[in-house]
Length: 353
Image (cartoon, rainbow, N blue to C red; front, top):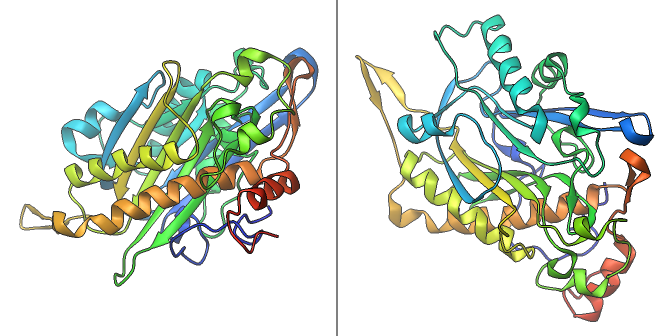
């Protein structure tokens, strides 16, 4: 994918080596992408797996979630609220595949030695029915297994992949995006991964520049999609030791990064955010020993979440490619050259090429 930073977009903050959520040691991401057929049964969907500590790491990590607007689904969150922990992977898919993927995680966990009598997997969704035959139920248990079994560290493929395959952002092709931040004067990092499927064209902002108003053509063929604010799932990970209530504070800050790109969280939008820490408590003598940064030290983390969320969304837009899907509908990619011309017009980054 063309890297927006390499193209001269002046994002703030220092990224990790990968500029991805996988800059968190041990975290693994896997995608299965389904692009099959044409016409009324065209398949443009998939599933993404995020394993906070990898397949062989800690099974439960501290976590919290936040709903900016709740027209969406993220399973397992009532237990996260109650327990302060996230157990197992986080899965991202389309709206009508949540149940299948949830059941697949239970089966996968049992085959991988999970000993709990029950499990409440976390599966989140956004709607891809404009491009995908969503009622064909094309995501299967085997696809979820593949995403989990092939998850790895290292660079994360972005754009038209995994759960983000058929997603749309502000009338342009959207999908999966990721970014990371290394904190100043601290060993800790923040990573963000988004499944982006939101926004009206006229609201789209790139680093404060009204790109959506400046590029008003290349709209999808149906006006209701061009003007509909869909949904976004935002995953925030950190290796900083934090308590669940502090992670809730991080999850809320993702809304500020989302707002920078032009979202106003419309009534029909499912904007659901999950934050977790890979710094797990130590267990000894029948007790859990938790470590946590003081609240007075959280501001750099808040800033990192906002910056990385904004950049992850822009990365998804720049990575996505034009797609034709169900019923021959086409959604165009964000035109890079024109976007950079708009950035120059507004003098946003003197090094924009």
